[in-house]
Image (cartoon, rainbow, N blue to C red):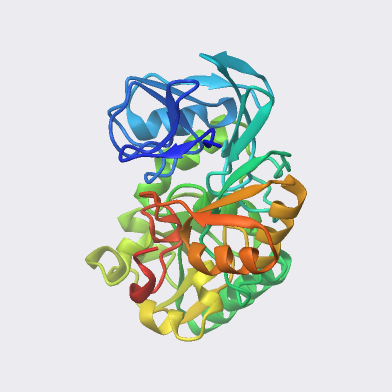
Length: 341
């Protein structure tokens, strides 16, 4: 039996509808699951995405994009498509595709943890499930986010007492806004790197509740050093811009911080285990709730999870894609040896 969605050299393709899902080469019709750069690329003829993510995808691709509300169905050729919350970031969606009574779901990147900046994950029953597997090893199990938030505030307070600026490395789209929503502005000034500004503004325009925070300026580096918490992209680490802030303690917020040695390889003083991808228990829960007869796994540790599922008697394969998950430009960067995921 041929699959509803097939892997091609241009991307995941639904022949019945004549469209691709998150294609990595230019195509005529693209369904986009979310606004990270390994999934939303410029150069396609027409774009369709979940409505809550519309401004972010439009900002990313620099072209007109059409939005479809979560759960609303649309016929495209012989396929019926709909988007369902994936919780990876604001507007992230799973693509549900029904053809001839059979259903395929492409999760895109997703998580099942609470996130005040994104709609909660929605399980979608299907026959065929194409799912990300960035953290598909049993050692990847996330602590409660509230515990990590306490750790961040304790670290910030320790730095303030020592006269150090707290620099929290986080990627500009999704992770930075989630962290902002979890920070307490009563503890001190919260600032962010200019690379995050336009995305913070888009979140605020969508009425996402974020605390008082603003773009860091050169004057701030003189007047607020030693008191502020500064959100910055990893590319700012060791940069001349960061050196203006004097004595700093650098933290890195990432699922990869779960692994011993990852913080050292990143050159960070502290690692905070907070990820916008599903951990091992959440991956297994999602597969079970889907009821899928076949599971296709994209990026990350797909081989390991496929082998585990086959040992349980479930049909599973690795689906080769150009998605790079937390190695991507707006996701959590892995240690160098894992960058090919």
